[in-house]
Image (cartoon, rainbow, N blue to C red; front, side, top):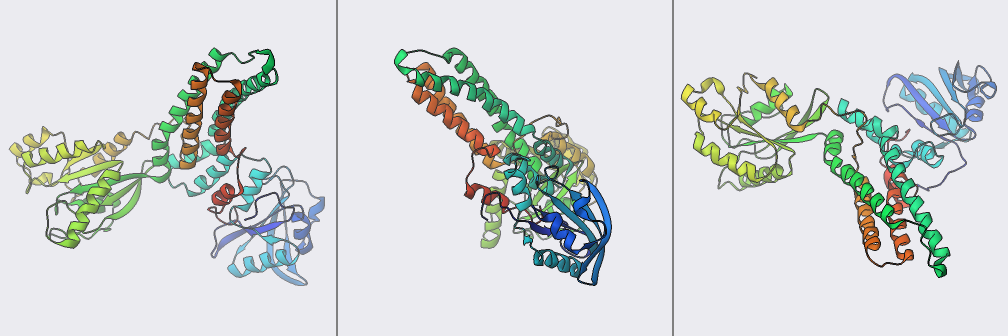
Length: 456
């Protein structure tokens, strides 16, 4: 993708490909209205106001291809800040392909992946972090991920960074002014105020960086490993959580030899459940590899559901397994399965370990388990105004900003000349600018927008 504002008109299908009731074809660029006007029979689109819809037909010569609705968005009042035309057709693949080819025949060019949003960014309709949030919004599959993407797309994260940059720019300009009067040994930037500002910004950066763990979970789902010894009911529990026969259930120990993943939405939060091979010592090479993968998945998980079977595990053995779980320093839920087979004395012994008692085969206790999971991740009560970082690129830029500001603090506390101090502040501003796109490269933009769907 050649990065830069191109003076041509692009076209693409804006709705998902495949047959459906409606298909929407989008054009954007200086000739969008003129190109559509050449094949649209109805009102003269060039004489119509912005944000209006017009009924008519699309024709190739005398042949009517389809009856359509044409929506007009005249620059700069459009998604891309260019003239935009959206043609709503019947959702036949044949009709859509004919109309797109017709627009290309009359001067449009097929859009590349993400090119409409790229134009919106290049034309100043949004900054880079907001543009990335558009992709997150399209991919959101839960209330929580939708909420975070909307907050970022509407500029919550951008506004936070804008305030930080404006404060730094003020001090940078004062220090730059000192360089102009270096021979007179004057100080325009109060070093004590600069230090306080840097410390204040550092606290904000720490908060933003720390929010990534939560933001990433909201965006991609909470990875939850279901672990335990063989044949304790892990696959049965997965099937109960998913409410379908996703995993093979067998009385033979060691049936699951690799991880099985699936996800569900629990009250607006996506959980990715991973059913793993049972943990035990084994001479079976394939099963041993499965056990090692289980241990690796446990180390990578956000949460662990550790399942035990009271008919084959005693309390002392389970207490030892719980101690090993705690060493991982990952939140876990101890689940005692087959509660209907527990003796009163057994149950009293297990209660000292504070487990949740369920019967996975009968789906008893599954709702209580879901509530416990929600409580552990603590994602239900996110404030709509909370700024959460969900993008690893943003985290890395924030960390680089922090490193540059540490150099600024060193320069304030030590006899460092104004030119070195100015350089460190400029470096911090550069890294903040990488997030919003005020500082960008063609390679960066191409990498970001190539991951978009065509038509967005």
